[in-house]
Image 1 (cartoon, rainbow, N blue to C red):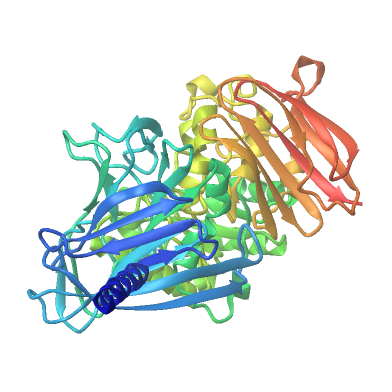
Image 2: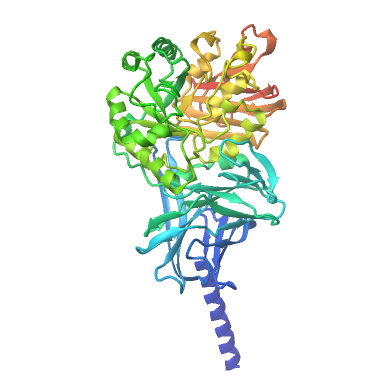
Length: 617
């Protein structure tokens, strides 16, 4: 009898040890819905992880590993901590950001290395993030990441081969190239996920690919080799998970939380705002644009490519404006009117003259620089680019990075980086499908300079067909107005491709006049990827709402339940009114009283939209 009792006690003890061991290698989000598990003791000594949401698989058993740490790996010990903070960004989609997560660091050893690799894993309610940290002081040559993301059968992804490409919904097989980040996924259990990259500031860009002949295995491909010295950390690999697409966008603060705190001690000089491009590079045209900016309550004007000569030539000098542009006089006049000036500089000369032009531009009184045609992807140019943003901060210059650069949260550390392109914006004259896809794909990573167009349509510009930009807007005026709310960008370009002579003082321009570009609160009200989206943003006691549909019409009932139930409000509603509205743009404007319990039936045209300003009374 005694032997049986001892036997059962031994079995119980072994079971308890096994339980503790499994718990040590498991990590849960604060709300308990997301679970990350890691295992060693694999046939070739690999590390395996998996992620579940509400018990359902998101990432099936998949590989972890990085150069020098690919096989014969063993978890030596584990440490853990929990964080529950809030912080206040210099600006943002909301004035308060929650940073709450559980973290474990798995210390890994291998007979092939003297040092240790730390795999740091954070479990947020919004997603799982992990990174590789090389401890010690070795010289590093990081050639590959072995990380994979094995997804359940019948998972689909919104594939885009480059940053300004259209998204295509594809199964996870036979991809025609590498996929940009973030990569949004629709899981078979009706959940949504998004794979991303955070704090990619001194590394090589990593995209996603699927091997020919494989299915449901997403792999990582680095642009090039990273040569560094330990201690050194890779960027964060991010797996966001949500019940609905709108929740992915609502939770995009995870990218900021995975970056270092602000390094600018006194950031009061950083001023987000609205900007318009000067299309004719002359002193006279600039003065006209400044007067228009004052009238239309803009904050900045911008001189684009050509102000210092042909941008494709290294002989052009960004220290010397062309003869037709008296830039000092323009800046003086702009300052007298309360308008700031931005300058475009192509990377061809930016990289050569950066250290000279930064103190020069500061002495001129320039507000910011738009980096043009930057080289992205490589370890060299990624590192240079982020160091250049930091240098701009030393001279109180704001930055807008254009073309293929995509954000990974660096604006938290250096908020003088107001925005960046890396998006299929209005320059490409996209349709409603594109515009209702971007909020749940590209905008998960952060702000995008999508250059909102308004008047650039053939019915408003008779000579459009013979102009340099002969394409016409496909979407309705109210769709375009709504984009200024939906597409978050602290530096918001308005009236792209337009000139002062295109304006007709249409009544709906009051929406752009009153628009803010940064917010105290943001609510993603509804959304279907490539179908529709409605977003409300608040500044003070004023809400701005944008709602758009894809290429199909949409009838729906709009709820005001996001408003304070104890207050009353006045609504100004902007809709596409058709020929019965006798203005060039046919935008109808109505005023209504609303409360938290109000409902409004809306009927959007194909590629249409509506916009609202709601003020507390």
